[in-house]
Length: 276
Image (cartoon, rainbow, N blue to C red; front, side):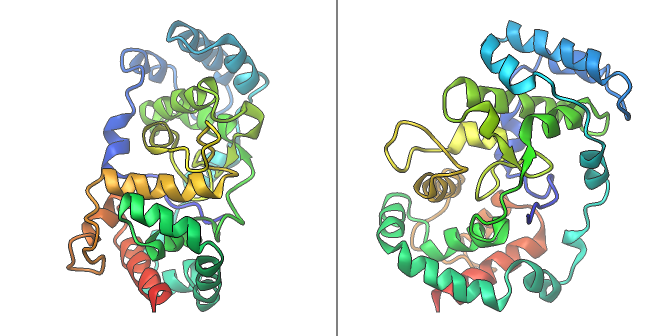
């Protein structure tokens, strides 16, 4: 899995979109901890708050029943290093030559879908496929960790309790509105979901139904994944027809996808190689 450092992964919207239960978060954060001790009563308090906020009991039971503290998630959170790499090192890890070749094949195989998405949102196919490749190897490595266990652990942890409490509420809402079943909510260690690794709050805000089945499924539906990624960029101000290389109008929009400079440079370079 190519999970990015979670705060580098944040677009501006995710920093302000959270606050699903702004009044409840501080009270929960006060009981945070840095070990498994205290997690169980914290989780029971969170469940009560979720019920009061209108999350369905069945969603709470299926998503949070049996959830335990995950020390591996905390270890991974403390050891994020990928954005310290040089551009060449980052490209070798996240967008090697083999990905360029594979990405071009994927673009040819999905030409009709990419045509439709590009017409609707104005985001060029090579940007969407580059994000897809850099995030999860074109969907091959979306993660296999229980989203609710990861987010509950990080919400309880004192380091960024408020932020991840909001993400946990957002993940519950995804299930509650019927987009995904709780048991299917698996992803990266920091709770990123699907083939382009949406944070739960961004999933709620920007995911669209690209295949017309009535659900927004960023884990299994290729059409939903590509359309939602394009929608995210368009909603953040993507200018159709404008360039995306450094110094061009849409390069700034790459920052909304990921705040790490090396990621933005790599994404633009990868996309340009796919287009040629």
